[in-house]
Length: 367
Image 1 (cartoon, rainbow, N blue to C red):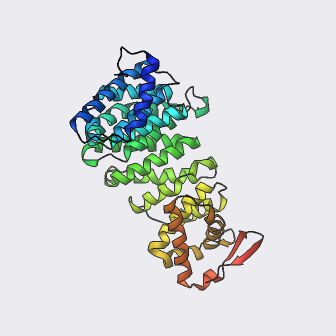
Image 2 (cartoon, rainbow, N blue to C red):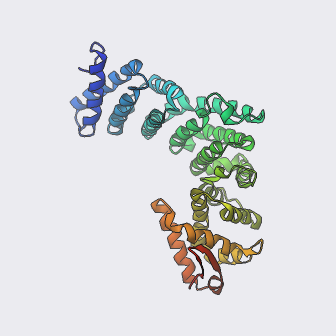
Image 3 (tube, rainbow, N blue to C red):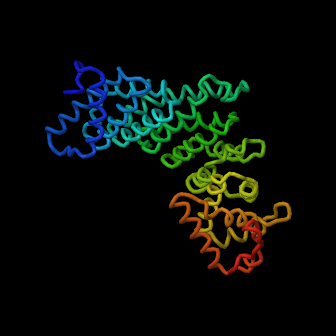
């Protein structure tokens, strides 16, 4: 009752906050509770019209709490409510807390199959239009920091990442292909690190759900070209934060050939990068390769010459220097276990590889 339109706003917002706090403890396994929750959700959508930048996050958080525990109710949300959140995103995407809360809520809704198509139809046309606008800007030589809303596209790509992981090739094939094509076209002319980083995250998500579609539509070569562009020395060094994860998708799902020059280019980037996340993502790529083709990878890296050093030496120097700094359970486990695979090979070339950068000493990798 305290959420009703006839109640003064301060009490309605207080009731909203209270409802969000108790929602996690409410069991929705009976009709009465479901009815009350559905009614509260409707009142919260109405309350959005009265919110401002200081209060809207309270409503969004409460709607998310209710949505996470009531998929049956979420499936009944009318599409016009999703449009309200698109408008909120347009206004508040650059507000860190609000923009992130909206993206989190969209992901919660996207998990409900009955909502996914409505969410895609609501948000993706807006994102497509933004991509088109920014492609024209880049083609004219304009950088993001010269645009009046520089964060509009990067923030929208973050939201898109939340949606793409749930796309189904049977119902969303057209959206998958269209989004992928627009992204590779944009990134072929982009110059800003944020676009490369968020763009590659979206691309790898689309590859994960629709690799066959991407191959069927002849988009593999463009995908590889984007990787080469990011690795180009003239590209901003911060553009490759998630490149390794993108390359993993290229090799494993798009069946891109691991030719010697391509891998040599990757090793050079490992050697030259001064950003930990870049190093970690690229080392993870080689760690995964070692898990499946350990001797072949060691042979290849040992025979690779890069300005007087072998690829194996350059990779291990960076890898062993930063292994203890890697984050994420998966990355730490895969890279550590790959090192144990190397040791079990008992390859003499590993004993002869001098690894520098470990403290003030240079050491051989003992086998």
